[in-house]
Length: 191
Image (cartoon, rainbow, N blue to C red; front, side):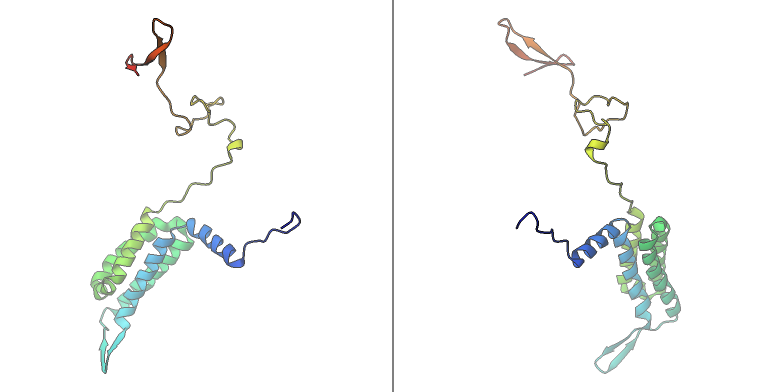
């Protein structure tokens, strides 16, 4: 390899994966996915016809239309969590309420599968908070972090993790002039 060799750019798959990861990190992705998946069994099971050999088992109930409405609403709320993350609190509360209603309306909430998925999705949506923006580079902070642990020169608040504060100490000297020990600010001898 020489200095003139061009740098190979990342492949299409890698670029798409990184873009998806960035998109996913700015919204309640898993909350939307669980809510979306929770709506599918709730809407599907009342209209499903299961075949067991030559026997057909129809799950159609009088609440089939209610189940379909709940399933479609949960599916829509899952998409809303993805594309309108500002409404995540409303979507989370609505998902939890629809999941609870599906217990009595839709075959025990889609045989508890849809109920649990929608309930988890709603709870994740309520607990999700947007991340903080990336911190600027260290050289652009204008002395906000003083290396000595004292206040920054421009009066900016200091970062408590930057430098720990220790109590004032004084060294005691013995008769021979050598350091004998350390006395902390409270007067207790250390060492």
